[in-house]
Length: 314
Image (tube, rainbow, N blue to C red):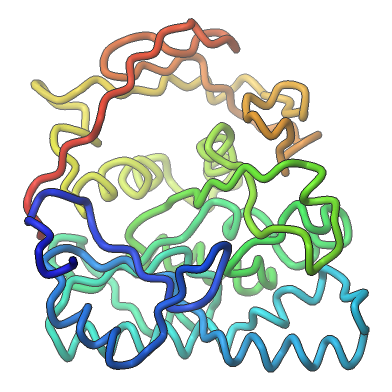
């Protein structure tokens, strides 16, 4: 199946090297080697080591029984589980000269594995999600399973290291890993609550908070959230404000606050982890394929989406 994939037919091949939501785990060493050897497109990996996670889970069960607090999530899906898997993915990519993109990095230690430099010079690239840049383990007490995700939101020190790696170009892309589970699902116990959170509506507003804090310049946010994803995945005629490209545009008011509530969330799941947050910017308008889709806090009713086209692999 992977060998028959035509270059340009897909943006890439995603591998769950650690078990997450669903049953898509690929951790057999021979299978992994075959994918890295034969893949005709970019390989994107979710990196966690499942046996380490299982061992940590058993220790938590011994300590707490079935009433494991959500605050244990970053200890169960630990930094070590992330690091070892990311290290393996990088070693396989180097062995087979495969283009690798490591998804939703969450730890300071993993940053040791990536190098700074322009995206176009790299065969191995890195991504961070907006929630790993905004939340930390300190927020589990307040938000509980609402921020339960895989890989887990970790410490404030990890978050600062991710921001630093974003600034010095060890991290190339900012993404969302959007997962709109229902509020009643997230209200269940640690074992029953699914991992993932809804993010796309407020992803840019959360990134702009780092601009207001003087941590990330606007130009970097544009590059990491728009230019780099289009370049990395070969998305044709997208990601830049250029003649002949599709007009996918966001118009911002950096001086107008936005109060986020569950009631104003457009997700079908009906909630947001940013409920009660007063972001310091507003999205005034959004154009999709040149058509106005959002203006002054309201959807216009336009449905201008189109299937994305991919160029050949990098």
